[in-house]
Length: 146
Image (tube, rainbow, N blue to C red; front, side):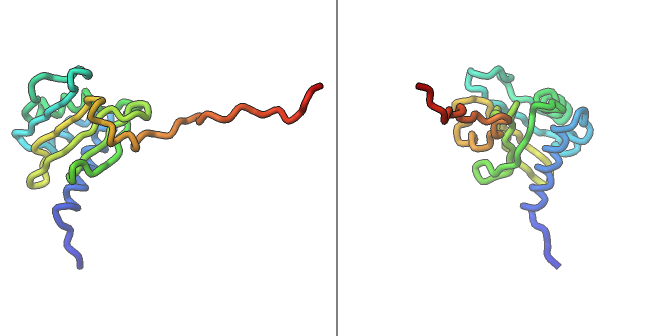
């Protein structure tokens, strides 16, 4: 019988966080993942409009996160290791728009760091969705006219 360690529990929390954010209105489910003193910090680098002050507290953080990501058809999440910890790459219409880093303690999210500054997202461009209609070479005419 194998024991499941903290890494497995953290993976589960990240998966539930992702599922809730992809849903429509799951404030209670998201709040259950957040520690009472949770803090959400965003980095827009002056290029993306984000709160200037951290968002703190379970209810405020849940509302902010769901307002930012919740239930939008064009928003998708890919689980990723970010700086060696659990995280998500957020795509909007197939383009990387944010990277979310979750810090956990006792299976609760204590800090959420959201990098939305396009200058800092270069390393995550490989998470892009392929184009739905990839460009094709123009047809070549094999007949010659004289």
